[in-house]
Every structure is written in structure tokens, then in C-alpha cells.
Image (cartoon, rainbow, N blue to C red; front, side, top):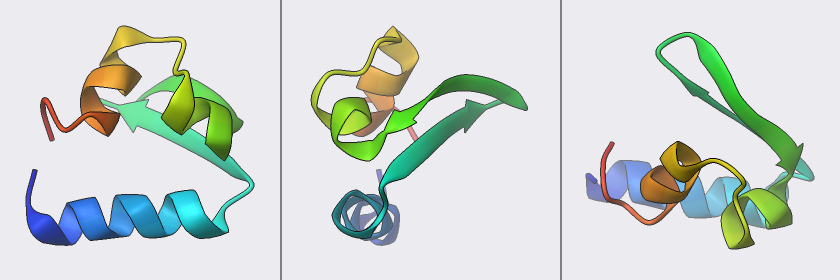
Length: 54
């Protein structure tokens, strides 16, 4: 994952109460930001947050 995107991801984690993860025009996951980053329900969200793909 490019540095700039990683930086934006962590800024979002710091300032947003809720986060939506959208992939290929599909809403994959929506919820409290802390939950999305700490315990994502969908494997695609987990892979993205962990930097496995961008």
C-alpha cells in the first residue's frame, strides 16, 4: 500500500467515528471506526486494513 494511502487510512482511524469500506462499488462493511480497524467482520476489510492489498 502506498505511503500516502496508509497515512490517510490512519488519519481516518484517528478522526472518524464511523467508517465505510467500499470495494468495487459494493459496501463491504460499515460500522464504528474502532471496530472496523480492530475487529473487521469481512476478510476483505481485514486484508485492506492490514495492507495486504490496496
